[in-house]
Image 1 (cartoon, rainbow, N blue to C red):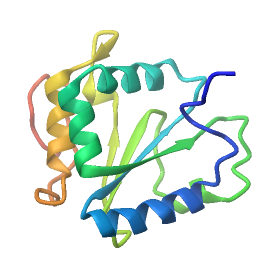
Image 2: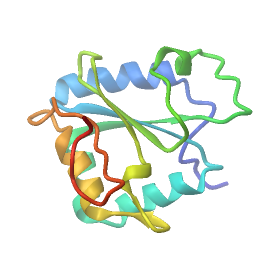
Image 3: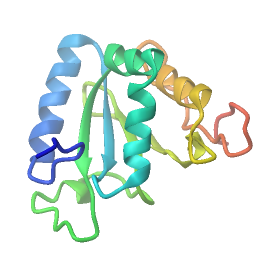
Length: 150
């Protein structure tokens, strides 16, 4: 059986708390990725990042990544999804500081281009929320430029 990208049996609270502890030790932020194995855009995003040495390296070097399963059929028995800010669809990124402060809620649609993702947009997002640069705002890249919201 192939491994799951988003495991519905994984306790998201436990994974998140472990990620915060690891992020604190490694001086990284936590990248919470919401999605599901049923989501084609989630698979496209993961493949897009994995296929780029630059993007996968940025994610690995600067983030502790936690993938959280989301589905309309998923009952969320732990109540984790009710504890995070609302979001409209998946994939969706949340970036947290090691102390648990929310730094960014980022829909991934602005990172898309055609039937895939835009390398520069994804890179800018990942670079923007590293520990040394955190403090900006989410990206609004629908117009093709690299600009912050508001």
